[in-house]
Image: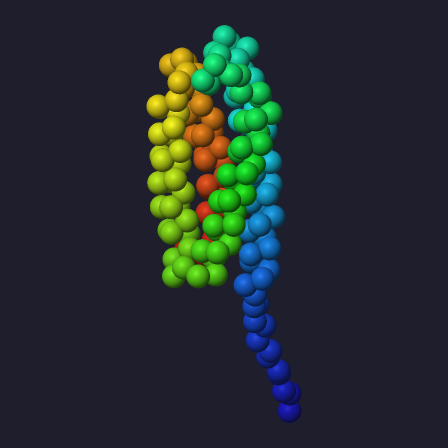
Length: 141
């Protein structure tokens, strides 16, 4: 008589490991977005677009610093939503799209040349286009 034993393998994903991966990918996306916004700002400046806002120039590195700060806020938001929201991906995408649109408002009303305003808005959109999809893909639907 022959006996065959079958064992079931269960893969368990703990909340901690999912959030750790989310943070890791979020930090990588943040670094990429920061570099991209500095490249966009430098390219715009090289093409003759002023980086002066309110009479004072924004250093190219300032684009990277602010992109880093606000992208990391997005990573924290995603980590919180991953633990608390019923549909974290949907909540994250909706929230960050609204925040991205709201981030354009100061660019519209700032004391700067039209080309500068457009460049500022472009950097916001570039950062969002990099960070939001990377993080959203790591969140449960």
